[in-house]
Length: 131
Ligand SMILES: [Zn+2]
Image (cartoon, rainbow, N blue to C red; front, top):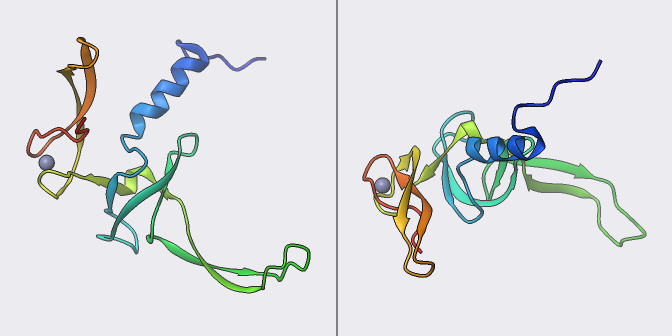
């Protein structure tokens, strides 16, 4: 038995994951659930396969590490950001400064002369990608 591929194959799977995660590195996010509710931070990294994001300074966990003699690292407590599921965070719109859902739109691009895909704020309809 082989597991059936999704209709679009592997590449399609990848774009599906991108659609689930509307965030990009450097975006400002607000956490909307859990113990870190209402804390804000910038996206440091995104894991599309796990649909999780690491937000700077948010969701800190204390790791107890052992001293590593070879790498000359001292042991002890280290505070680290833990990844958060994308559904627990919302994008903060740079225009209206409020957490918002994101819709997709197209704008005319002067550089290429064609259309460019952008993210649009559902609240104020302002463009999130300002380039
Ligand atoms: Zn907005």
